[in-house]
Image 1: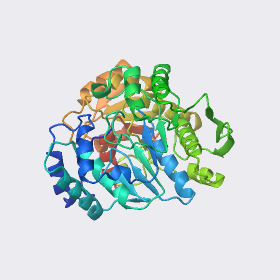
Image 2: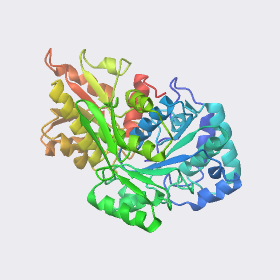
Image 3: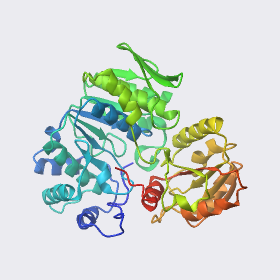
Image 4: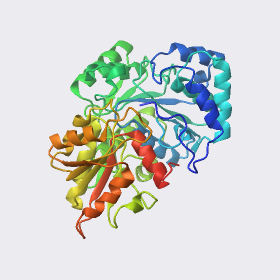
Length: 448
């Protein structure tokens, strides 16, 4: 997913100078998403092809788990002393989250300068916001020294603005599922073909566990290009055993700490990250993999919210979690993670959910049937395309949940005071990265 509000508000509520240039860039194209590489090639040529001057690139596509997989790789690489550039999207609170230069989020002055140079090179011609900001990011990655660039696809793969690197070190494809059907197709096969568009002739690719249709589509493209594939469940294995992560391939077995990121699905993401770095053959020491599993962080991916202006509105003892999951596969992963928490520490589960109108709320909510005690539907702040809370509540009732609506997440937390004393619930706020960003901003929990 590539598009969110351009800059995000300043935490203090003041307009930032960089927002002026964001406003101009947003006006260059009538659509936020218009998949094509022609405009990228034009502006990159005028910038003297920064995509040819990058450090070694690990290119990451997929539907779910891209950000978490990148977070694990970054943590391992930095534990090994590597300088790591990272490009991810979307941001949650501030655009700067998308660009990490040699380990540090880009500052406003550096970002504004790169955007201004990309804007001047574009010379007012049509280009999407994601394309021109990606061009600016590539410019920065080409100028600041680093050992490796972790480059996450924005949307799809074949026509994504990041797909301009001729020879990445390796390609990575996380699990593929149904999402963004308006742009990528209505079947898993069609979507996987778009994701497989990042594969490059002769460049090894590492795949997370895939549905049968997705794997077949990726294998066909790999065969055409002579791409060596490393497939979870075939060339390598990753599973939890005795509270630890075990990754095994032809190079041997790694017995690692259980990943810091919460949820059974993170076992797969961590295993994919580990195998990708092993295939990249960077000579990383074993202690880096161990430290990376303990250190990896990725905001709004089953993030336990700490004290803040928003969480303090809930009654004492309420356990509050935040996730940006919004599609069927995301719902399945979240439900499995919450079921695991329920097994260990039983509590009533309350969902606070806001979603965009383009998402299948029924498919997202179905895995929570029998697990969630109730759902409180809320609007997504600032999003006119959000699903009406009444429609979300109706979808929850179809799956047997008690459902109501609230004007905001804060109001939903206020309403939790109806629970009996000593029965403080576990709360999951989910359904949209837009909503997750608004929650983090309101709570003062800014990504670093």
